[in-house]
Length: 120
Image 1: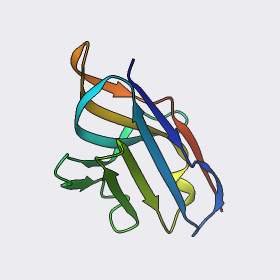
Image 2: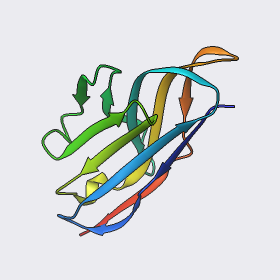
Image 3: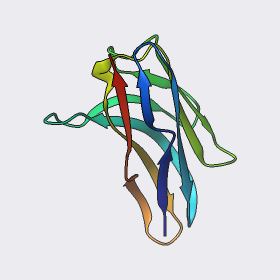
Image 4: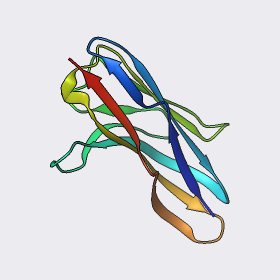
């Protein structure tokens, strides 16, 4: 069974930094694109950043220049380095992966989310 587990969230002051991690485990044959999404209270889930298996990246304009997405293909890990955090970055951050499960084939998977709170 494939699982995505996020870690690294927490409470930080504005201007601070956090590093989120996403660990993919289970019957994984391969992982294609991965991404971070976030959902603030009362708002829709939105894209933060994506990264392909070849490490091409894409960022939301609101985080460009402050956040950096990366991955370690050998370890099935993905990271999000968040610098210069702002109160508006407060949200639950979700890990997403487009991957091939050995048993089920290709599918879209989500983690359970990790809370990031930025105080002003």
